[in-house]
Image 1 (cartoon, rainbow, N blue to C red):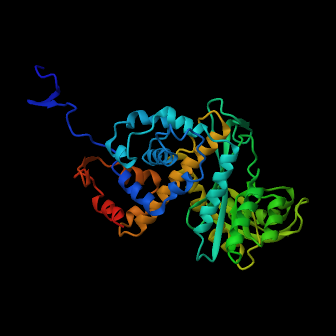
Image 2: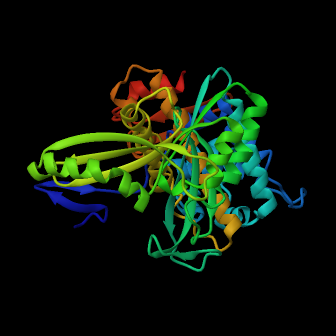
Image 3: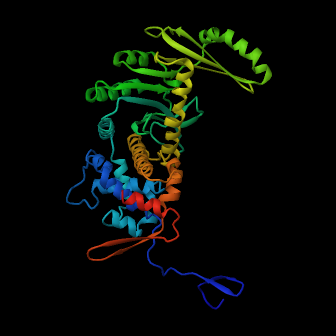
Length: 432
């Protein structure tokens, strides 16, 4: 090969390469992210809450810029602070951030500067901002669920959880069951039970909601890990409706024994699918009063499946409560947690301190909230297929766009790839 730029030959055609093209970014959609931020000012809101103890005469990168850099890069798929080493020459990010990117040590100091008081201030600000979005609503569904975050280092309060069989953090999420918004994300030590702290936190959330909207109907939905005496007392105190799972015990087994026997004989033995519901009142020894319970005895075609729930939604029957409301938490809560955890990187809590890792959970949740804004913008377009996209599909199909930038005295030109498939969708989103 006489030409050093020749990589290989395709027949008689030489395939050459060099690095002489214009500076091209693979993250052209930061333009859309900046447009959404200017419209909704979500990052600006939280940057006002974050304390800054640095010497003001030596500050190069203000808090709002650090927060914007961290969240925007996470939205674009860069999960760690040290990914800035790959982005420091990115022309589009440098333009959006109005200067050079903060270095990895600066971003690490930013994350590790959080203590208990600053995290609690963020928690209060998060709930306050959510309450502002409830204007005009007549009903609110609060989904409560948790997830495990396996740890692989010496993170503070990373502990062994016997249920999951691993060292981990225990993440807790309060979701809006209708909009998908995160009402509040909470990080807990790894050995926490599912219902640890949640009643006390829910009480604080309810006080803020009731103070602003006293007539709002609130329904709580959760699985059996969140069934506890304190919750049922709280539901009475605040006039909550609820549908909560309950784990099987000997008393519940006795109440469903007759129905189970009949379903086994008539349907399980024939490998036939069938669902049978029974309702009854039940009071555990620690509950302050009896509750209405429902059991689903189901022949799946391969065996017997029994589930129990507790609910005070008298206006609906057992089947409607279970299939019309309770099971919808799978899409409204569980799938949303998968997006936060697996697609917005809340499983990357690798700082040493517990409170910095709590803040990293906030960063992942903020990234998720940015994606919610993108989803809401997509719903206003005519692209039906895009309305079903999850976070990872939005990132791969819409946000990772090749683009260059040209700056003149009065204008900045963003030029996107001619080969981009979703040009019209992106155009509609940017100009909404």
